[in-house]
Image (cartoon, rainbow, N blue to C red; front, side, top):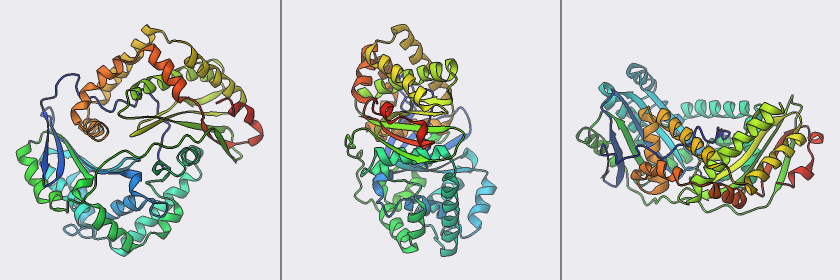
Length: 432
C-alpha cells in the first residue's frame, strides 16, 4: 500500500538536477525506446531504472496488483537465469534490485558498481523480457504478497490511507491499488500474467534512466540487444483525467485503539500547472504550523501533517493521530483559516524555500535519486531538462500565491477516520 504520509517539504524535490545547464545528461532513442543517460564519473556506483509508464491507469478493478505480481514472480527465474540461478547471480553480483509500484509508473531497477554493470543489466532485462513464470513459483509469490497485505490490515496508518484514497478517488485510476488487494491477487491467473507480459512489456511504455560512470557507447549496445528487441506497441503517456469534485464526506471505521487516526484529502493541480509548486509550499507552511501548535504547544498528537501527494495529479490533505480529535480539528481549522486569509511573511517564505533547496542538495547525492529526478521531469514535464527549472519555480512562489492556492484547493476534504466514533464530532468535519 502506498505510504502517503510524507513530510511535505523535506521529501519533495522531484525535478531539480542542477540550477544550471546539465551538459552531462543526454537523451537518445533506441528502436523507439527512450533512454536518458547522466554521466557521473565521481564514483563507480551506477543506477539503472526502467519506468513502466501508466501505473494505476493500466489496471482495472479486477486486475489490481497484476504488474507487481508479474515483476515479483520474475525474480524467481527467467530464460537465461532459470530457477534459483537468478538469485545466485544476484547474490554473486552484490547488486541491489528494486521494484516500486506507484500511481503513475512502476520502477524496476538496480544500483550496482560499474565493474558488474553488464551482468546486472542482463539480469534486469531478462526479468522484463523473458520471465519463466513457473506456476509453483508464481503461487509462492502470490502467497507472500497476500500475507503482506493482510499484515497491513493490522496497521492503522495503512488502513486509514486506503480508506482515504478510496474515498478521494472513487471511480478514478488513483483509486486502484498497484499492490493489489487480497481478492484480486487471489483471482489473477497464470494465463492473465502471461498475457499481460505479452501485451504490456513494450518499449513505448518504457523509459530507461541510467546515472553513473557509463558512457553512451557502452550503454546503447546493451539496450539494443535487450529491451529494444521488445515490440514497440502503441502506448502514449498522458496523465489521468482530473478526479471529480465529489464534495466533503466522512467515512468512519470503529477500532479499539490507543489513539484515533484521521486523514482527509482534496484534489490539487496537475504537475504542469503553475500552481503545483505554490501548493507544495502552502502544504509545507500548514504542516509546520500544525506541528508547532498541535504537537509542540498543545501536546495533542505525536504525529500531525499536511501532506502533499506528488503525482501527475497532485493532492493535499491533513493527517493526525490524536486522543482528542475534536480539539485537534478546531486548531487545524484555525490554522487553515489563517493560511487562507493572511499573507505569510516574505522573509519566512524565503527561509522555507532555502530550506527546501538545502534538502534538495542533500537528497541529490545518490545516483538513484538523480535518476528519479530526471524521470519525473521527463514524465511529468515532457523533458528531462525541466529538472533544472525547479529552483526558479520555487523562488517564484509569492505570499499571495500561497494564500490563493490555499483558498482555491484546500476545501471539500474527504475524510477517513479510524478509532472511536463517539470521540469525533461530524459538525467539525463539515467545517473543512
